[in-house]
Image (spheres, one colour):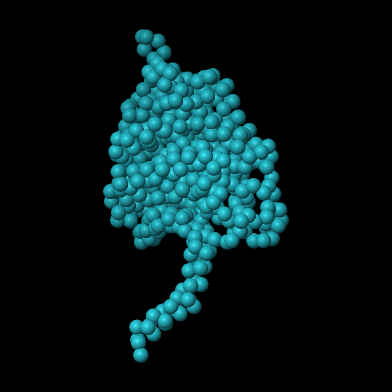
Length: 526
């Protein structure tokens, strides 16, 4: 008897009877014969419209104090400096509609136009045109926003919004029952964007060499030192260290392993969507990251398809009939749309280059690649990502104080950042108080490395109404103080015993002056 043959037959039967169905279930055959993405596109675009609406409304409430003519960093002054230095190149290097009308009124026009375009996208009217306008308007504001619009979620919104132009349906008012399916190329560009976002977020932490990430102790500091924690973040900070280490390990698995499931068969991909969305919800609970997490959740929805929802829901929404899954034939090769196809594959190449740059070149790619990436940088639409590459281990806070006699100093309280020790960390997301956020970054460097901060103090001494409106309260309501300074404190969360005894969420230690006393001369003799 040939034992080798018997073993061969046994293993073949084992694979046929048991492994075969499993492979068909979770392997390539897991994609249904018929698939559509109309409902997913419908949800994605409306969610994106709401995120754009949040971004424009949030900025509109602050824009005068931040970059208006009486604001901290006036946009017109910035553009005048750019114009004098680079001439006609300014229209490419600093692309903004604000060049045509550098006034405070036009800032309102840009923000108001963004709000209107967002509403049009939400209701589904002229979606492609609405997305194009949203991208152009938000780009115009990001470019002139300088320090106050330099966050990763700003450029992620631009990148997502740009790709969504090609993903959106054409027509005046396309309905959900429309039989046209979204471009699979555009769908995969958005999925690859999500992959790039997650993978780079993990890679930058590993490549930075920061010991807190390497030894899994980053969460010992993160909840306390992040820019704007929530009150749940206070409770998370009290958990045992082993919980934080396990959480960091899970985070690395999500960002560096689960991210690859974006390219996996259908059920695995659906599972990765659930993990990524759950991960973002946990971040929302412990920290205020504006609309960043909402954008990531929205991109994660694109890992699903219409068949993910039950048949009853599809019939209720009158979805189109299921389309034959000839994705490869019609999605990736589109002879009638060769220009779009070439553009899409060029974007795939750039995405790969950006990921490779993060993982292997560590920010210093070869010169040809560096020139390519630099040439597209002005549009803020093809970006690299990765927050907290180096964990902040100490929380320093700047407390701005005014006085008329240099003996009694009264603090200027901010709306959201830590100040008053008894005030709990608050929820503010998805709104972004951009001055409060920038104060966290200012504390990482000296005041003379933050020109905007000195301008901020000067505006307080000038009693600029638009700047004072960015603060929670003005301790000098009748007239501005004669003197102003900034003190430096090291802040820590209290422990449960101190919180119960003193009803405080924070404790602090004075470290000295961050910025010395300054004043504005009223006449040459002063």
